[in-house]
Length: 628
Image 1 (tube, rainbow, N blue to C red):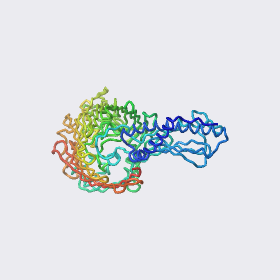
Image 2 (cartoon, helix red, strand yellow):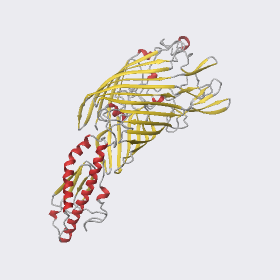
Image 3 (tube, rainbow, N blue to C red):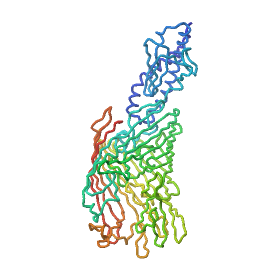
């Protein structure tokens, strides 16, 4: 039986595709392996080549099917039935032909999948191509995996920074490695690092590598006069993303990130240093490249966090600092949210709306406790209920604030060819309840904030300036210092405190292995107070007792030496540092860093003045990133 020949046009098409794919595959695959978080141009090229790949594979399947049927009818010459292997940067798919004598035809696909055949005849459309082929063998169309190498499908080049995995700021944001593994149609990308950090500080602040500026001691405490050394590996981190392509335009992904930054009651700093794992991020994303919409639900960096490009998770603009509290004045939190983002103008204009988990930090200076469960005494004999201690799987030693509605956050970002610019706003609803003379009443305030940020690539990919700020009322918890959002009024209602925070930084990348940075950050709070029955209530009250803040031991004997209320007015931090990546290869990256930081605390004036205090620190860090 004579096999009907293919038309000249079809032969030319198959041959042309083989030549184009063979020519394009090596550079495309190399690009993909080197830069999995690539730009949008790569996605379009890969989608086009995937379509070519499928057409080519169908043609080759049809040819093999004709040959197999002919051999089955004529008794066949097994030597002619070659095995086929299609290789590329994608997943692995295996089908089969009739037995061969080892001849192999190979076609390289730039963005496709890898298909190896071992000893069986293929079939198409659910019909076996040979009487010896099992009827339930998967078809090519049912098993070929379409995989895009880019983890961030749509970004515009704005000349900001080096590659987004390389800097420590990107690592803090959750950047993934460049090694991709496959479980069928699902891509698995790993990230994280082994971290060993240490610091020397001129005050005793028992917060480790995490700065807690509220605890910087004044002269009344012996901790002010004591230096401290601390080493820590608890911020070693592991992250994982599972990513699948639902269709050429729709991508679903799940991301989780954890470290050992949490402390249980059984933590023993004298022997085992057994810190417990904590959840940093855990969210699902759904990206539609046709509609240019992006959906996120789960725990992630708040959308108020400045970004370096677009409004994209794991692209937050975080300082390169070693301290895990980041930087005084930095706007951030990690919390549950539902986020919808849309981009326009070829991914240069971005709009986002996010509904996020609320929380309110209250200052209760002067208000005595009326119970042990978030209840504080009011001057009129009643009490205010601002929260409840955790029960069940929540922390029993943490008071969770009463909240009536989620925070609402909006953001607008612009990525021209030079720099990144954004503005954002937030609305928050502090809520509590008071009980006076047996009559209860709920109170709700409306807090708000507005701000923005920009990154200026003064020398693209070499030197950049970052500026960011946020100001408003009742939003102190969105700053690293964690200054209060509100205090209480005489009737127990929330009294919102004004708030402002800002950061400015200069980051240099002299070469591929060295990053140098310098930052200034500041966060400040307003005040709200009243007096009743000769007693001072509220935050920053001018009648607060600060007379003992400069005398060591007064914190233990305030009756004789005076007290030290000292509500914080502002915290400033100056810091410089550098990171050096001295090993980089197929087994990952090893880097070391050092940082010098100076923080100064200013307080609201009271009786005895407005005392200040300071903290100087030297950080060291050694970090191994096996996946980068």
